[in-house]
Image 1: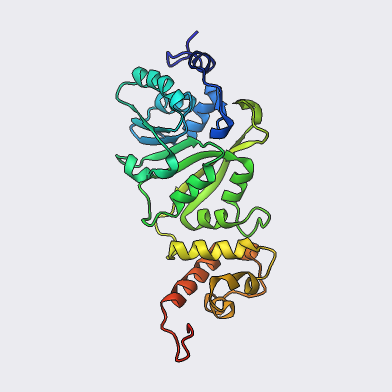
Image 2: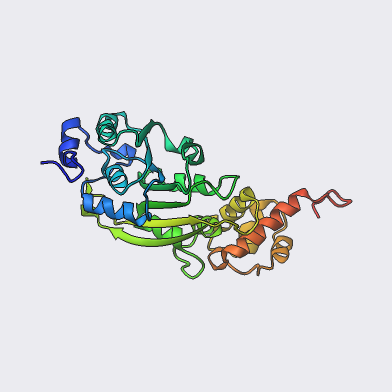
Length: 293
């Protein structure tokens, strides 16, 4: 029996092509088209839009995106076993599906998307989800071409994405980057039994919208500051920041931060100010004794 889009049920597709999910590739397949449709609709009206999908697998979410009216879906798939199944979807939607075989961590989404207000929508493989998001958030050029990113992660990662200093247990480097350059919010959970094979954790879908004008800050300096601060999150900033190679007291004073605070207590704006102070110190001429001023 075929589905409403005229294609075979995903279980049949997986069986026909021998697509057993591989743990090494972080694969967990979604067979429920009602759920994949909900994810596609969470990205907002897709009519005529370009959509980038990472890790389509047998194409459950791909089918939902096309059924919701996406003008073109660019699907990046690393597993060559999935390409024949995706080709069948492409034949059902002529000219609307482009499959790129490759590693998404090495590809720039801006280079793959065209048209106005393109979106990223993906059930990201667990083993590369955080790496991909961090790569996208630390691009030198901002704002990006993509208008929004609707992404599924492990619930634990999703909690870190939307956390700030009011949720110290989840707040970390990822929360700072997301809060700095995007507006991020949790949409809904997806239980383990929705997947084949079922993972050991609950998943969650997160929506991120790029800020057009985030607080000005050198991205590499912010990465260095958050790495140092959260790398020793139990220590006060005056101790954890010593690895930056500059006197923490002077940096903290310039940023207007209390040296006795811990990383989890500092808002995004505080980390941005600290990163600007670090970047400024790096370009200052040394004093007469050869020390950074």
